[in-house]
Amino acid sequence: MTRIAVIEKDKCHPMECGNYLCIRLCPVNRTGKECIVKGTDKKAFIDAELCTGCGICPKRCPFGAIHIINLPESLDGPPIHRYGANGFHLYNLPIPHFGKVVGLIGRNGIGKSTAMKVLAGVLQPNLGRDQPATYQELLEFFKGKEAQLFFEKLAAGKIKVAYKPQAVEIIPKHNKGTVFELLRRVDEKKKLEEYAKQLHIDAILQHDIQHLSGGELQRVAICATALRKANVYLFDEPTSYLDIKQRLHVSVFIKSLTAPDPATGEQAAVLLIEHDLIILDYLTDLVQIMYGEVAAFGVVSQPKSTKNGINTYLEGYLKEENMQFRDHRIMFHEKTPIHKRSSAVLTSWSQLVKQLGSFSLSAPSGEIARHEVCGIVGENALGKTTFAKILSGVLEQDHGEIQQQVKIAYKPQYLDVENEELVAFFLRDVIAKYEVALIRPLDLKDLFTKKLCELSGGELQRVMIAQCLSQDADLYVLDEPSAYLDVEQRLMVSKAIRDLMTQKGTSCFVIDHDLLFVDYLSDRLSVFLGEPAVKGTFHGPLSMDEGMNLFLKDLGVTFRRDPESHRPRANDIGSQMDQKQKSEGKLYYT
Ligand code: ADP
Ligand code: MG
Image (cartoon, rainbow, N blue to C red; front, top):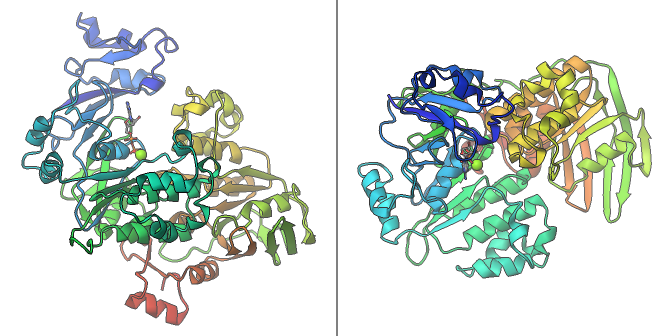
């Protein structure tokens, strides 16, 4: 059995634990050997060969920085890559299939981006050693494995990769000028105009890159990647910041990249990482699961058909590999839930109208009950934030009545933090009051010793959700809380929100574009319809069925439930099921 030792460097604080507590406790060290030593970087360093796996140091490290892992026996041989001897270890690679879209799914910190960077040629794998491996060594390594053919083609120059990295926010830091100028530089296919139209960015081609919203940057990045004359396209989380309509458009676009080239008949391969299960399901032909231990090691599973792959992921058990990677299965409600809502009204409104420049918002009558969670779906720029501001009195409506102004706590959509504050300090009130309700379920303790500005997208998201929910308010408004969270975290957040609203007797509006998450979390649903940046109308809150029907009608898609996991799945447009549901007017589950 192989043992690895991983130390999360950013969590190792050898002075604050009392001068290398792990070194002082290690029984192997006490026999005079050097199992744990002070590393050259002043952090602890563990020699996995000498480690006996006694379990003392990982248990006693106050910052949870140490992982000592006995790898599953199926993992014979070295990793594809490790970030140093005590760093994260990656085993196996996902394999692009020509003519197909392959999806990679797994928890945050399990190595998805690392695996993709290896395929993209951005990260030179080291096969678990201290220097990068040569091509020859890689070919040798992959002999007889699924990746062999891919690396042979790569070595022979027959593969050209185009890659969209995860973090689109940094594009403006490295690129100046207009969208058009950026895209023209990479337009090897001479399809700039065509692609820009398909991705609905033709209207912003003359805009300065510095002034784009997250959703615009995402689509520009996707467009730039697709314009490369490549035969392997890699997309790391292509739907963050996009609303549902945009997600569907982007899905159709990405899928089209695998169509045969009219001139040569050749088909490209697409590999992507995606946490929105409805989109993953809709967009991919095959799925590969990544499992292991977050921040310590990650393993890529064999490819499976999408339906089977997603259900296996929810199940938490890989049959072929005989690998249980989660201690529980994730289940969805069989029927649209009808949660008991309290009849006490928090506030109500009638015939609200607000004009802001050339944008107008209207909200016919509606009311929100105490301790209910109300999902809000709709395109970007339809006035979701404006509506919340009116309810809280930050903005005054031009017409209409509000029965009762409410105190609102708001978590914005974009989290741009350059704050050097420590998480423990920033969350001090949450720690004092909501240890059980927020700190534990959102898994925040491990972040306490980090600075806000050092957090990853998913970490910052959880911190900001906790900070918002801990405030004293009547109505909580969370704008896109699912962004950057993995599937498990989305469900944990859902549960934490629900429990807290019940406990406090308060209400929550959750604006989100992941329909599976919205479905899981909401008592009722509100729908924003209209024309982005011109006119928005707030409908609701409605029952889940009514709301989804209204929303899906606008999108032109229908949903059914998977009989096994009960998760919602989008029907192929024009399929039998789609036509049947449309003719019966039941767009959301039969
Ligand atoms: P995912 O994309 O699945 O969220 P990543 O591939 O980004 O996961 O990260 C997997 C692990 O590798 C994490 O623990 C991360 O901290 C670590 N890691 C990522 N990049 C580096 C790096 N350049 N040096 C050291 N560790 C890294
Ligand atoms: Mg990633």
